[in-house]
Length: 116
Length: 116
Image (cartoon, rainbow over all chains, first blue to last red; front, side, top):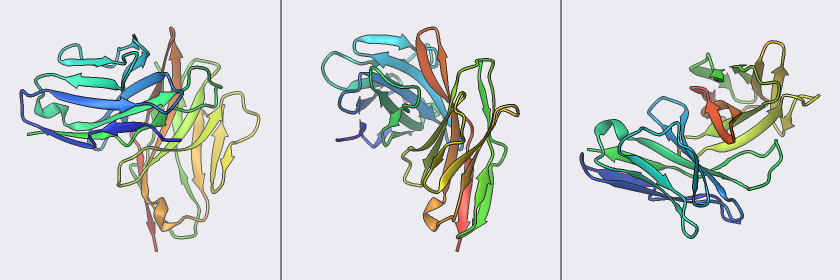
């Protein structure tokens, strides 16, 4: 049973370019969450999606950032016109559609974005 | 808004000894869940243990146990018989459920170093 998969694991972009981060949730999971971890910090919530729906994007910067989770295929976090401050580790997590209170979110290995 | 506080930026412990990592939380919700994650130098987030606010007993999972003191709003992680492989960042998190959304709120973490 494969875990949450993220690719690429490392991504280098120059200022002004676009970054696309992909996340495939665990099999059977229909809920996806994106978190950002700045250096020396804990993870900060960005967005919560279900298939074809954005449930909560309260943690997402208003400009340049967008996320989707289409009916088919992985969830995508897209950052347009990247700036140096976007350099961080971006984690995706997933959870099943029906779950007990004890169920955690299962995290992928993260994508380390470096903006030059 | 919920808040997680980890007051120990770094902790040191001798191999085979026990160590306690502190976590306090702030919430007005009567029902909540608390999680601990381990992040080794490789970067992935590994779920360790969960404590529900209504659980009668402290959670245990192998060498990990949670010292849950509800009145003090603390959920300290105890690692017994420390091993060199326990050296990592440790994050305390709380599940926040609000208005149909759900997210994890993380503390800033504690860096644990196990000395031989």
